[in-house]
Length: 358
Image (cartoon, rainbow, N blue to C red):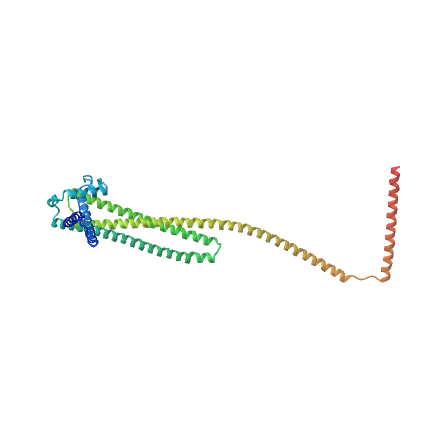
């Protein structure tokens, strides 16, 4: 408490020397000295309050004077109190140096424990993040291997047999196999998780039984159990994260499967349309073949008729000129006779029509 006594002495000297005006340099030095003493007292007071709060329960603490009244009133009250009770301040009993040293050592040990806990938490968080990174790298490697296998086994086949049903069936079979493998892995991890939980329950039960029997565990055993428990918890958390990742992957696979199913449905519709078109083209081809056969038959008949006409033409002998002239004259006379009789028939029909009208 020597710093506090020095500051109070300086304040009293300042109040007593108000009549004697001090130089500005001395005032600045005095202010600086008081500020340094106040900061040291503030640090010491905060440490004392922290130690006091650890010793005394929270509900039994008495409110501090600075919490009841405001800061200005507290400063005014403190100044008045110091000015009135300056004579009796020498009789106040404070902490001795040994007590302060012990208090500081306890505070230092608490700080070391806190730093140790923070370091342990940081190491655990670091291990957790490293495990997450390692898991992500393993998962990325598996994804790359799956993509390579898919490109090697499926995409090359599809590019060679584009539009075929066998390629689609192969894709569906590959997706079903992947889902089956993921389901098997998920079941294995779930069983392993269940077994770890059962093992943890057994260990907790054994620990509870030992506590009930009264067997006190050594610090080393307790620390070992804590480490094993933390490891099991990390393993369970890692497996849960892996299970979540597998569920997400399964959901993504189902989305891909649905997309491929829609593509397969479109391909099947296209296949049905192509089958119908192929059937129409086959019918048209059969019709063309029948027409071709009919044309071949007509061609054969025309060739036979042509041969017959050529044969007749080859056997044809032209008549004599006078006979041809005589036949033409006779043909002309017959045509004139036919025209005359046709005229007579028309006149007779006209006369008959007139007679019926009268």
